[in-house]
Amino acid sequence: MLLYNSMQQIVKVSQLTKQFNNLTAVNQLSFSVESGDVYGFLGQNGAGKSTTIRMLLTLITPTSGEISIFGYDLNKHRKEILQQIGAVIEKPDVYKYLSAYENLKLFAKLSGVKPTNKLLMDQLEMVGLASRAHDTVKTFSQGMKQRLGIGIALVHNPQLIILDEPTNGLDPQGIADIRNLILILSREMKKTVIVSSHLLNEIEQIATRILIIDKGQKLVEGSSAELFNDQQTILQISVANNESAIQTIQSSNWANNLLPERDGQIMVGLNKEDIPNFNRMLAASGVDIYSLQARHSLEDYFLQVTAGKQHVGTFTN
Amino acid sequence: MWEHLQIELYKVFKRPRTYLSFAAITALIGVIQLGLLVDGKEYADFVMADFANSFSVDGKILNGYFICYVILQLLLVHVPLLIALIAADMISGEANMGTLRILLTKPQSRTSIVMAKFIASVIYTLLLLIWIAIMGLFLSMLIFGTDDLFLMKSSYVVIVKESDVFWRYAGAFCFAALAMVTVAALGFFLSFFAENSIGPIVATMSVIIVCTILSTMNIPLFNLIKPYLFTTHMITWKEFFDFKVNDANEAIIGSIQYPDKIIRSATVLAVHIVLFVGSAVLLFRKKDILS
Image 1 (cartoon, chains in turn orange, brown):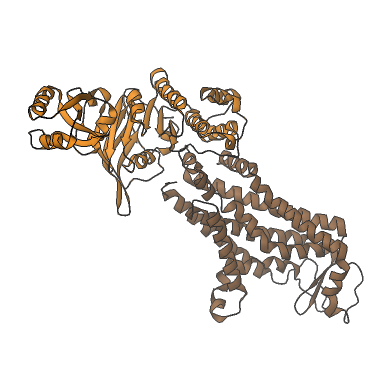
Image 2 (cartoon, rainbow over the protein chains, first blue to last red; image 1 turned 90 degrees about the horizontal axis):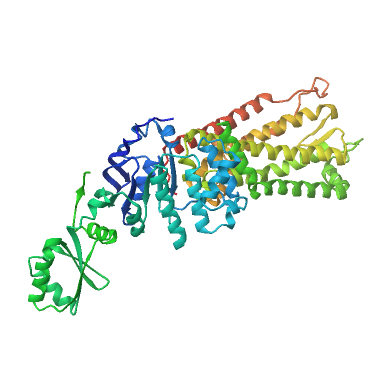
């Protein structure tokens, strides 16, 4: 059993690199996760999220770099560290010819837990599968399998929970259930959670800190409050003629603030205090403006950052 | 390790596929026994045709010991497929199901995981052979009775006294177990290179077929490698039924004509097992799990 200070960094990744032949999947990636964080891990498909998560779980050996978890080197203390980690990696595949109860019992044993009937049934109750405990998994829907996967990840009461796309295949109610579960794990049970998802609004609602990576490199790391600094605004502009408006912006001092169009809307990244001047410039140039809307969602921010228009770097608390 | 082995055995014997092999063995042996029970006399006459003018045989040629020998000759060619069904699926099947990555995020060493899986394959293989012994030997003894074992070799006839047969079967089954564990080790090793079960199962059978052809063809080039092929040694179980004779050309009870041949073959098979499993452990410890 590892002992660690509850205030310490739970995960510290330094200069992590993974190469597959000529492909560098993760490149000199460094980040840290603090105790109690719900750490949102974001990136486009192929950005290196899953490779990084698999390195944290010792499924993939890093080419170089260091990973310490609970203050211990992952290479040297693999077994002890994994006793304190629960994970769902992409699809929560389990043994389809076994029942939910049997799967949970089997993985509890492998996690070093004595699987009492009460423990197993409580766990199945928590993920809403108690009534199907003895049905074989092959009769389960994708959402039920996902919930069983989460039950398996939590059965040994780990301190760190790593969830890679935990809402995959879930219906809206299922997504909400997982979101609530993550919040309970973090706020009430004081667990640290690393969660990757392509559902940015889900991450936005639960993450206390966020890491965005692209092509294996860190683009941004910081707390949600820091990332959604309202001084950094994306302006969504609806006009009568997009082409002429874009030409006007490109020939102005704001050319570098222009972002790729989205859903037929012009997007511009601006500081809050620049918005009135920008508006006046458009109006003075004869652009017919229907609406100007400031957006602060994670999706906007993610698209802004991954489009390469902004490299924010690392925030510090 | 012990707990992990229990888990692996639990998984193996919870799968319906596992019992297909036992059902197949039961059906095959049942068919052979039924055929010999109904038309055994014609079969015995056919087998004895070349010797009919030279020998007058008292007693029961078609007894349980003889039936078991026939069954072993026929079945030990096909049993590798049934073993490959499980052994070659051990890692690749888990990769295919996606359970391998969950398994490896648990606080267990990779060596322990591999060894538990291999030992589970060995136990399955041994149980399959025990089942063949029960069905092929004991059931045949029950149905056809016992007598001296009459074996026709290419240029001579061997008659093993009834009192001298049983231990030879025990030895033959032990040797067959070693041969089949070699097949399990090969399937297990090949299962590291695929993420579905079919590939390693087909690959295992292909390797066995190719090596068996090389082992049986009498071509000088192949003769050089024959001693190193495990398939050359898989049929050495038959050596348990060749005995030494004294000056009066009488069988020496409890003897084996070429015990050194059995020891050499067993050593070659054991070396193959160590190589296959050792390579599997080394590969698995370094393997990136991308499934």
